[in-house]
Length: 308
Image (cartoon, rainbow, N blue to C red):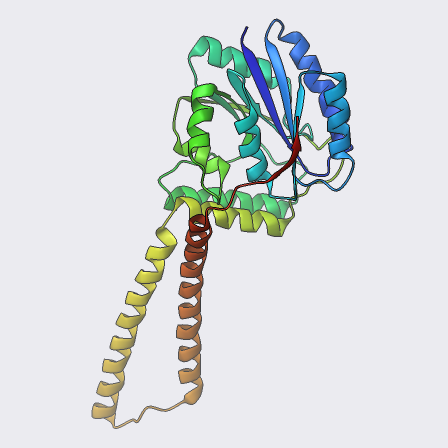
Protein backbone atom coordinates (compact mmCIF):
# COMPACT_ATOMS: atom_id res chain seq x y z
CA UNK A 1 0.00 0.00 0.00
CA UNK A 2 1.33 3.43 -0.95
CA UNK A 3 1.86 5.89 1.85
CA UNK A 4 1.58 9.67 1.94
CA UNK A 5 3.52 11.55 4.61
CA UNK A 6 2.16 14.96 5.59
CA UNK A 7 4.86 17.19 7.10
CA UNK A 8 3.60 20.17 9.11
CA UNK A 9 5.98 22.68 10.79
CA UNK A 10 4.42 24.36 13.85
CA UNK A 11 5.44 27.24 16.07
CA UNK A 12 2.99 28.27 18.80
CA UNK A 13 -0.03 26.90 16.91
CA UNK A 14 -2.23 25.59 19.71
CA UNK A 15 -5.33 27.25 18.20
CA UNK A 16 -4.83 26.06 14.61
CA UNK A 17 -3.47 22.56 15.21
CA UNK A 18 -6.74 20.82 16.30
CA UNK A 19 -8.63 22.42 13.39
CA UNK A 20 -5.95 21.35 10.94
CA UNK A 21 -6.02 17.77 12.22
CA UNK A 22 -9.78 17.54 11.60
CA UNK A 23 -9.41 18.77 8.03
CA UNK A 24 -6.44 16.57 7.14
CA UNK A 25 -8.25 13.50 8.48
CA UNK A 26 -11.14 14.25 6.10
CA UNK A 27 -8.69 14.23 3.20
CA UNK A 28 -7.13 10.96 4.39
CA UNK A 29 -10.59 9.35 4.55
CA UNK A 30 -11.35 10.45 0.97
CA UNK A 31 -8.11 8.96 -0.33
CA UNK A 32 -8.53 5.48 1.12
CA UNK A 33 -7.03 2.90 0.73
CA UNK A 34 -3.89 5.07 0.69
CA UNK A 35 -1.98 4.96 3.97
CA UNK A 36 -1.21 8.27 5.71
CA UNK A 37 1.15 9.51 8.38
CA UNK A 38 1.04 13.01 9.89
CA UNK A 39 4.36 14.42 11.06
CA UNK A 40 4.14 17.56 13.20
CA UNK A 41 7.30 19.51 14.00
CA UNK A 42 7.22 21.72 17.10
CA UNK A 43 9.82 24.39 16.43
CA UNK A 44 10.48 25.33 20.05
CA UNK A 45 6.83 26.22 20.73
CA UNK A 46 6.16 27.95 24.06
CA UNK A 47 2.41 27.30 24.22
CA UNK A 48 0.51 24.00 24.38
CA UNK A 49 1.39 22.93 20.83
CA UNK A 50 3.55 19.97 21.89
CA UNK A 51 0.93 18.80 24.42
CA UNK A 52 -1.69 18.75 21.67
CA UNK A 53 0.68 16.78 19.45
CA UNK A 54 1.21 14.21 22.18
CA UNK A 55 -2.53 13.88 22.72
CA UNK A 56 -3.13 13.36 19.00
CA UNK A 57 -0.35 10.77 18.94
CA UNK A 58 -2.07 8.83 21.72
CA UNK A 59 -5.39 8.93 19.89
CA UNK A 60 -4.17 8.27 16.35
CA UNK A 61 -1.23 5.98 15.45
CA UNK A 62 -0.81 7.90 12.20
CA UNK A 63 0.34 10.97 14.12
CA UNK A 64 4.05 11.47 14.84
CA UNK A 65 5.84 14.48 16.24
CA UNK A 66 9.28 15.99 16.69
CA UNK A 67 9.95 18.64 19.32
CA UNK A 68 13.04 20.86 19.05
CA UNK A 69 15.08 21.95 22.06
CA UNK A 70 14.53 25.58 20.98
CA UNK A 71 13.34 27.59 18.02
CA UNK A 72 15.55 26.73 15.04
CA UNK A 73 13.30 28.27 12.37
CA UNK A 74 10.89 26.95 9.78
CA UNK A 75 13.65 25.81 7.42
CA UNK A 76 15.05 23.48 10.09
CA UNK A 77 11.53 22.21 10.83
CA UNK A 78 10.98 21.43 7.14
CA UNK A 79 14.25 19.52 6.96
CA UNK A 80 13.45 17.55 10.13
CA UNK A 81 9.99 16.64 8.84
CA UNK A 82 11.28 15.48 5.48
CA UNK A 83 13.97 13.44 7.21
CA UNK A 84 11.46 11.72 9.48
CA UNK A 85 8.96 10.99 6.70
CA UNK A 86 8.71 7.44 5.37
CA UNK A 87 6.01 7.79 2.71
CA UNK A 88 6.25 7.16 -1.02
CA UNK A 89 4.93 10.69 -1.40
CA UNK A 90 5.54 13.60 0.95
CA UNK A 91 3.26 16.60 1.38
CA UNK A 92 4.69 19.75 2.95
CA UNK A 93 2.15 22.27 4.21
CA UNK A 94 1.42 24.88 6.87
CA UNK A 95 -0.86 24.24 9.84
CA UNK A 96 -2.89 27.47 9.53
CA UNK A 97 -5.01 26.08 6.65
CA UNK A 98 -3.84 28.78 4.27
CA UNK A 99 -2.73 25.74 2.29
CA UNK A 100 -6.06 24.07 1.29
CA UNK A 101 -5.90 20.35 2.21
CA UNK A 102 -8.43 19.57 -0.53
CA UNK A 103 -5.65 20.06 -3.13
CA UNK A 104 -3.83 16.93 -1.92
CA UNK A 105 -6.15 14.75 -4.00
CA UNK A 106 -5.34 16.73 -7.16
CA UNK A 107 -1.65 16.56 -6.34
CA UNK A 108 -1.72 12.79 -6.00
CA UNK A 109 -3.64 12.35 -9.27
CA UNK A 110 -1.17 14.54 -11.16
CA UNK A 111 1.85 12.65 -9.85
CA UNK A 112 0.29 9.22 -10.23
CA UNK A 113 -1.36 9.65 -13.63
CA UNK A 114 0.51 12.49 -15.38
CA UNK A 115 4.08 11.50 -14.56
CA UNK A 116 5.11 14.52 -12.51
CA UNK A 117 7.70 14.23 -9.73
CA UNK A 118 6.26 17.14 -7.76
CA UNK A 119 3.09 19.19 -7.65
CA UNK A 120 3.60 22.62 -6.08
CA UNK A 121 1.21 25.49 -5.41
CA UNK A 122 1.22 29.22 -5.99
CA UNK A 123 -1.18 31.95 -4.94
CA UNK A 124 -2.77 33.97 -7.72
CA UNK A 125 -3.43 36.90 -5.38
CA UNK A 126 -2.34 38.22 -1.99
CA UNK A 127 -5.71 39.32 -0.66
CA UNK A 128 -5.62 40.03 3.06
CA UNK A 129 -1.92 40.90 3.14
CA UNK A 130 -0.65 44.45 3.72
CA UNK A 131 -0.03 46.16 0.39
CA UNK A 132 3.53 47.07 1.32
CA UNK A 133 4.34 43.40 1.96
CA UNK A 134 2.79 42.33 -1.35
CA UNK A 135 4.72 45.03 -3.20
CA UNK A 136 8.09 44.01 -1.77
CA UNK A 137 7.29 40.31 -2.35
CA UNK A 138 6.75 40.96 -6.06
CA UNK A 139 9.94 43.03 -6.17
CA UNK A 140 11.86 40.19 -4.52
CA UNK A 141 10.76 37.61 -7.10
CA UNK A 142 11.58 39.95 -9.98
CA UNK A 143 15.00 40.71 -8.54
CA UNK A 144 16.06 37.19 -7.66
CA UNK A 145 14.98 35.83 -11.05
CA UNK A 146 17.19 38.45 -12.68
CA UNK A 147 20.30 37.69 -10.65
CA UNK A 148 19.97 33.93 -10.06
CA UNK A 149 20.21 30.92 -12.37
CA UNK A 150 17.59 29.17 -10.25
CA UNK A 151 13.98 29.88 -11.20
CA UNK A 152 11.68 31.29 -8.51
CA UNK A 153 7.93 31.31 -9.18
CA UNK A 154 6.07 34.40 -7.99
CA UNK A 155 3.54 33.50 -5.31
CA UNK A 156 5.05 30.05 -4.75
CA UNK A 157 4.22 28.39 -1.45
CA UNK A 158 6.08 25.67 0.42
CA UNK A 159 2.88 23.61 0.01
CA UNK A 160 3.67 20.73 -2.34
CA UNK A 161 3.66 16.96 -2.84
CA UNK A 162 6.90 15.26 -3.83
CA UNK A 163 7.95 11.77 -4.79
CA UNK A 164 10.39 10.03 -2.48
CA UNK A 165 13.18 10.44 -5.04
CA UNK A 166 12.85 14.22 -4.95
CA UNK A 167 12.64 14.25 -1.15
CA UNK A 168 15.88 12.27 -0.96
CA UNK A 169 17.53 14.76 -3.31
CA UNK A 170 16.45 17.66 -1.09
CA UNK A 171 17.78 15.87 2.00
CA UNK A 172 21.16 15.44 0.34
CA UNK A 173 21.50 19.23 0.46
CA UNK A 174 22.28 19.35 4.17
CA UNK A 175 23.52 22.94 4.21
CA UNK A 176 23.08 24.88 7.45
CA UNK A 177 21.72 28.07 5.88
CA UNK A 178 18.65 26.80 4.07
CA UNK A 179 16.22 28.45 1.66
CA UNK A 180 13.74 25.74 0.72
CA UNK A 181 12.03 27.56 -2.13
CA UNK A 182 15.37 27.73 -3.91
CA UNK A 183 16.37 24.18 -2.96
CA UNK A 184 13.14 22.72 -4.35
CA UNK A 185 13.79 24.49 -7.63
CA UNK A 186 17.52 23.75 -7.74
CA UNK A 187 17.14 19.95 -7.48
CA UNK A 188 15.05 19.98 -10.65
CA UNK A 189 12.54 17.20 -11.50
CA UNK A 190 9.24 17.63 -13.33
CA UNK A 191 7.02 20.08 -11.43
CA UNK A 192 3.38 20.96 -12.01
CA UNK A 193 2.00 24.17 -10.54
CA UNK A 194 -1.47 24.44 -9.07
CA UNK A 195 -2.92 27.91 -8.66
CA UNK A 196 -5.38 28.88 -5.97
CA UNK A 197 -6.88 31.98 -4.40
CA UNK A 198 -5.23 33.13 -1.19
CA UNK A 199 -6.84 31.72 1.95
CA UNK A 200 -7.00 33.47 5.31
CA UNK A 201 -5.39 31.96 8.40
CA UNK A 202 -7.95 29.85 10.29
CA UNK A 203 -6.70 30.73 13.77
CA UNK A 204 -3.81 32.34 15.61
CA UNK A 205 -1.45 34.98 14.23
CA UNK A 206 1.28 34.88 11.62
CA UNK A 207 4.82 34.54 12.93
CA UNK A 208 6.31 36.29 9.91
CA UNK A 209 6.80 40.00 10.45
CA UNK A 210 7.90 42.30 7.64
CA UNK A 211 11.44 42.41 9.06
CA UNK A 212 11.67 38.60 9.27
CA UNK A 213 10.49 38.30 5.68
CA UNK A 214 13.07 40.87 4.61
CA UNK A 215 15.90 38.95 6.28
CA UNK A 216 14.54 35.71 4.80
CA UNK A 217 14.65 37.25 1.32
CA UNK A 218 18.29 38.27 1.89
CA UNK A 219 19.07 34.66 2.82
CA UNK A 220 17.55 33.57 -0.48
CA UNK A 221 19.58 36.05 -2.51
CA UNK A 222 22.82 35.13 -0.78
CA UNK A 223 22.11 31.39 -1.04
CA UNK A 224 21.36 31.36 -4.77
CA UNK A 225 23.23 34.27 -6.32
CA UNK A 226 26.74 35.71 -6.30
CA UNK A 227 25.72 38.80 -8.30
CA UNK A 228 25.94 41.09 -5.22
CA UNK A 229 29.64 40.23 -4.98
CA UNK A 230 30.11 41.10 -8.65
CA UNK A 231 28.19 44.34 -8.18
CA UNK A 232 30.62 45.37 -5.44
CA UNK A 233 33.51 44.90 -7.89
CA UNK A 234 31.70 46.79 -10.64
CA UNK A 235 30.99 49.73 -8.33
CA UNK A 236 34.66 49.85 -7.39
CA UNK A 237 35.71 49.96 -11.04
CA UNK A 238 33.10 52.63 -11.82
CA UNK A 239 34.20 54.84 -8.91
CA UNK A 240 37.84 54.57 -9.97
CA UNK A 241 36.91 55.66 -13.49
CA UNK A 242 34.80 58.58 -12.22
CA UNK A 243 37.61 59.66 -9.89
CA UNK A 244 40.15 59.56 -12.75
CA UNK A 245 37.89 61.68 -14.99
CA UNK A 246 37.34 64.21 -12.20
CA UNK A 247 41.09 64.49 -11.62
CA UNK A 248 41.69 65.23 -15.31
CA UNK A 249 38.87 67.77 -15.26
CA UNK A 250 40.24 69.60 -12.22
CA UNK A 251 43.78 69.68 -13.67
CA UNK A 252 42.52 71.01 -17.00
CA UNK A 253 40.32 73.58 -15.32
CA UNK A 254 43.22 74.86 -13.21
CA UNK A 255 45.68 75.04 -16.13
CA UNK A 256 43.28 76.75 -18.53
CA UNK A 257 41.35 79.13 -16.28
CA UNK A 258 43.67 79.24 -13.33
CA UNK A 259 40.78 78.32 -11.04
CA UNK A 260 42.07 76.41 -8.02
CA UNK A 261 40.00 73.62 -6.56
CA UNK A 262 37.58 75.06 -4.05
CA UNK A 263 34.69 74.00 -1.88
CA UNK A 264 35.14 71.66 1.03
CA UNK A 265 31.38 70.77 1.15
CA UNK A 266 31.64 69.03 -2.24
CA UNK A 267 34.75 67.22 -1.02
CA UNK A 268 32.96 66.04 2.11
CA UNK A 269 30.01 64.79 0.02
CA UNK A 270 32.32 62.83 -2.28
CA UNK A 271 34.21 61.32 0.64
CA UNK A 272 30.93 60.36 2.33
CA UNK A 273 29.64 58.79 -0.88
CA UNK A 274 32.77 56.73 -1.42
CA UNK A 275 32.92 55.76 2.25
CA UNK A 276 29.27 54.68 2.19
CA UNK A 277 29.78 52.55 -0.92
CA UNK A 278 32.86 50.97 0.65
CA UNK A 279 30.89 50.07 3.77
CA UNK A 280 28.10 48.67 1.59
CA UNK A 281 30.53 46.46 -0.31
CA UNK A 282 32.17 45.32 2.92
CA UNK A 283 28.73 44.49 4.28
CA UNK A 284 27.93 42.36 1.22
CA UNK A 285 31.21 40.52 1.62
CA UNK A 286 30.50 40.10 5.33
CA UNK A 287 27.15 38.42 4.67
CA UNK A 288 28.70 35.87 2.32
CA UNK A 289 31.62 35.32 4.68
CA UNK A 290 29.30 34.79 7.65
CA UNK A 291 27.38 32.12 5.74
CA UNK A 292 30.64 30.41 4.87
CA UNK A 293 31.76 30.63 8.50
CA UNK A 294 28.56 29.01 9.78
CA UNK A 295 28.82 26.21 7.21
CA UNK A 296 32.40 25.39 8.22
CA UNK A 297 31.41 25.04 11.89
CA UNK A 298 29.29 21.98 10.92
CA UNK A 299 26.68 22.64 13.59
CA UNK A 300 23.53 20.50 13.45
CA UNK A 301 20.56 22.06 11.65
CA UNK A 302 18.38 21.30 14.67
CA UNK A 303 18.44 19.49 18.02
CA UNK A 304 15.61 17.15 18.98
CA UNK A 305 14.29 17.30 22.52
CA UNK A 306 11.75 14.50 22.08
CA UNK A 307 10.00 12.67 19.27
CA UNK A 308 7.68 9.80 18.62
